[in-house]
Image 1 (cartoon, protein in one colour):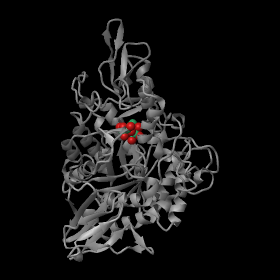
Image 2: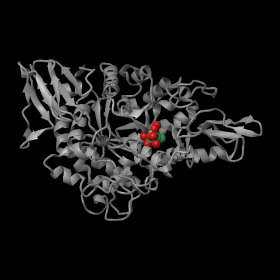
Image 3: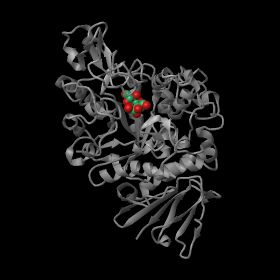
Image 4: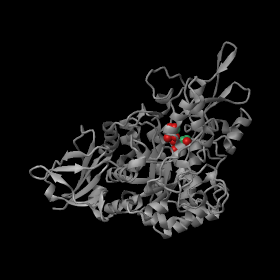
Length: 570
Ligand code: TEU
């Protein structure tokens, strides 16, 4: 039976490469993670999601798995992992593994077998098709595009056959139509469950099912060529139900799917409790409020109304039906204080705390990305070669290939790069920000570490970390923060975001100034009924009294990026 523990959970995401390097070899590792578990627990987190720890040639830094039942050497051994699970559980921290099963590494034995001979039984583990003849050339079986630029098909040697890869060419898509593939996957999931893990985060799960036969995408408005044929595919619900029945439902688990631009209807169905598919999915719509058309490298001025839609819609859709997640950062996004047209040099503390309050008082399980809890900032990369993420290079090459000047292409890349959140964590002001004992890390450290690091934040009068602790405590002390129905106010307001959470007569009200201008907000309820439980503007370490104006004291003066949480108890 499922206890649905995830409803009260707070999940902390670790990107193992960059969290803590205990043996000073330049890579973060399991031993390093264990040394920081108390820190994570003290924050108020109750679960950890580990970005992939499996064996991988790292073309996409762990998201190309070559052995699903082995821990990669650079992170440690299987014994280290078993100890990690024990150390987490001893501290009441649940363990959530990343599961990357839309594709495998091309170094996975299945793939090597598959391409070794056209008669290999593993051939059908992947999506392999004959190319099309065009004059003297062999062209890919369809016009589908990889998420990481270019054709989604790669030719196998000098044969006429191509395999599908919706990401790097070193990540071959699995053929989920093949029951043997699904059997192997269920076996892998249960292997980890038997080891004691408590759940999974599924990488791009809504691409598992493709439309057959393979055909060209002729529509003009696809987000990405081919997307209508591989996003929310026809057998998605069936596949998830099978995994659920033969795996997740047998354990007291939490499963969360990372969705890639799902339709509203599909998104709701994936998480509807009675459907028995996933417990929750990630929705990233609000994170597209500062880029053009969901393309993260193309900046646009922040649009609060778009943020509100992206943030509230999935909550409203899931409420009463299933569960939701709350996300601001992850290993695929820049740091949140550097987004949304925020001047991080001036408002780092105010914006970091405002974003946290707005996000984590919402309906769903909070996900916090390592370092976000201390307001860590983007890295001031000076040149493309400092970036390790292949995507930064693919897009840079594409732009410069079209003739864009290098400096301009680099500026675009720097705006949306995944590298920002992947640099080693700045723990303190010692060498390499305390990430290790001075060995050059796999990815450069953020040169700002002497000024902006976790230790300094915790000791500072205005500490983002201490604010997070108070904020997360509200989810423990106020049931309505977890279970409450969500109501949004003043949707059209382009500076203020406001909503309430109501449960059994108790109410929390969250309102925040999402701008750098001091703003007057007409409070929509009787303000005197409420008590302030959180305010990111402090006087002598205590929440500042709220400045009210107007006859009945119904107007609030909100300073730049001020966020307050008010509570009403009948
Ligand atoms: O990401 C899926 C994804 O499509 C994006 O978030 C992607 O990183 C972005 O569009 C690139 O600009 C997942 C993982 O989170 C990501 O790290 C992997 O690279 C990707 O799948 C492939 O496994």
